[in-house]
Length: 566
Image (cartoon, rainbow, N blue to C red; front, side, top):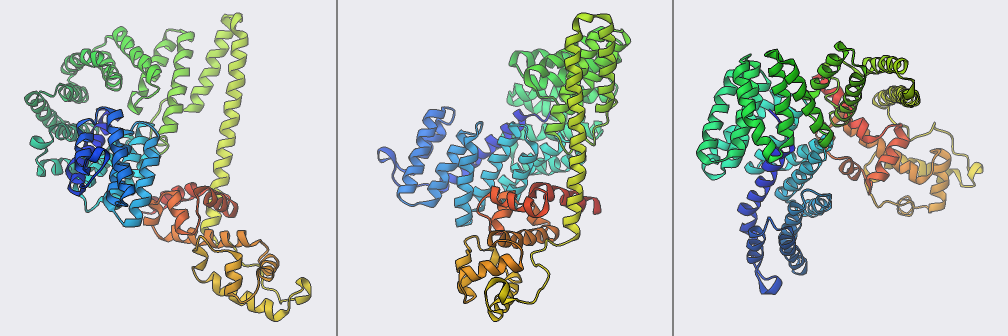
């Protein structure tokens, strides 16, 4: 079934707020706004959590009081509540980054894990799945010893794996989440998350084709939803079992189940579920040879896609069917319409599922679609000369698109070559050795040779990783002056001091990324910080200048290479 934002936001936000209620309250005490204690403020915040204005005022009060009293835990509490309240806008990133910065100083794994989780949820909602996964994986580094947060993190990673088609791996995660939910008695203490975890498990079994297991857990979910009065999850389980029955080729049962939920989803304006329901409803109608009704429901999928601009990869088949249907009817106008729509769908899928694109089995790949589009356009031009100007514009855009594709593939080839060069050789920071010539730069040979020897020792140490190192500092260490040191580096290293230090750091980080798999899970900002760069921009610029590729590309490619070797 679907693994939409409604599910991940529900489990993460509920989980984080629940966790905050259970865990953070243990640490709160003292005074605050209007002589209230931390505990009073926090209880008021939780009570008004649905009112963003009131809850924000309480969170700010906790933060201000914590800063005034220099209470690190209360400062973190304030920022965390602000990040949770602002989970749907970009402020969550700045609040979370503040928590991360403070938490690293005091080595607080719990707040680090929660902050990276918050960021992962934000990027998931924005459909930036690569950034979402990066943050969930980073959170995992901090929450292994924190069962509740570890459960939420693992579950979130499972949702992303399911979303990009790694169904078996996702199922294994959902099995562990289900075990945790039962061990902690979620059924009684946290029934909504109990049902969410159960639904993901049932959906996982559907996706790997273990239909009997899927039916078992769907029935369990239906019974528990009815018992607890959770109508939302009841209809989710009914839809999931309807889809399961489709794969079991029990089309009449599937038809009845999906018919039942569509009315409910329409009333709730649950568009992600509606898209999935209409898609499988149409496929069931095709099996029942009710072609016209199937077409109507495939068109409903398209209508909802035009509203949401989001679609699950499985529903892509909608457009392939509509294109073929109108092709068989010699209806070029509608065929062109749905070719255009499919190109739009593929553009969104390729943007949101970069790792998924090579795994999608398509009857219509992009080159074939573009060729078919040209043929249809040509036919329409012969039928109706009035649209010739529009067709010319489309052809120009198509040409530009092809040029863009050519540029893209050439760019990828260049990047791959540069990556291989970096992997197979060290970045040079030493020029060819030459005999010191005092006449060349006006410095005695003894001084030059002494400085060169000290530079060699410096290069073999890790002193260049100090982010605050300057040429003045280094010249003092070498018992010389900055002017001499600058001349010697320019002459014998063929670069200025800044580039010399940057190249040493880049060479160091490349070697560390090659050898340290855990290091590759760091964010680009964290990697740069580890080797002495104060900003992400400075690190990326220096890395690109030395290697010709960006650090994010290098980390991604070296990870892919490692996975292939395993």
